[in-house]
Image 1 (cartoon, rainbow, N blue to C red):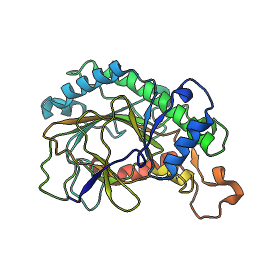
Image 2 (image 1 turned 180 degrees about the vertical axis):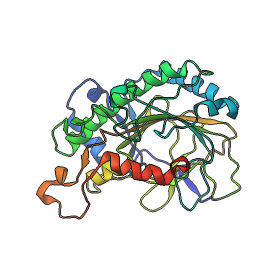
Image 3 (image 1 turned 90 degrees about the vertical axis):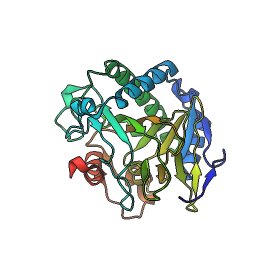
Image 4 (image 1 turned 120 degrees about the vertical axis):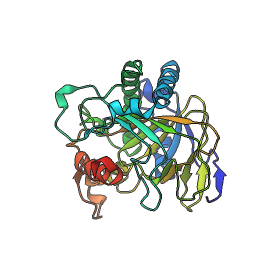
Length: 315
């Protein structure tokens, strides 16, 4: 493995978003979000308002799930709508690496009214052997989604747009939440990662890290930086759709996970995306100043293409 540097606050800033959570149009916070997204595209946020007790309970329920025998987890194997359990080796985020050494459990919004309008939306598959996971997972999804909305307001203000610019088509979002489990990994194969180097597909990712660590972010010079856990914070990073939407102004940065700690690692993720019909077009932000050739595309079509490439069950 290449040498990894310890990150500094200048590289991944910590931003207090409590004013946005309170509904304020805080331009200074918006500027901080804007600056961070133009550089590394990764940041820590505090003051997000999520319930730490809920997060801890969901961690414990997640560990109960992943420590169960595979035969039990197979009862909620991932569906064609990307809901349920993905076993180790069923995802590959880097074409040049081995399949990811991780397991995931994925769920989304509980809204049957919109099932069937896109292949990445459908019924959740809750496990009977981890009965608390349903209520905790739904509560986490709703709270994290609210935080994502506050952040998207901040990004809009930072870009000089109307505060609700990114929130106009969010009534039936394609967002997914997931628990991601990384067993201890020996650093013996340079092509084996917990999750291989990749950029995130969608608009925005919110991540709760546990205390173990292992997340690494690649800077503009190609060096890998360790992004250690900061208690009470969320890690936020720009996804490829937001990069496209902003014509590259906001950076979607490669990152990976290597869990060589000697302990199991569990992360809680929200991949935030708007409605499937949302048109992602740089011209809607840049206007007449944009003279590039990035095409307009819908959120749903783009995500469908990326998922088909990354996940073996969709092949």
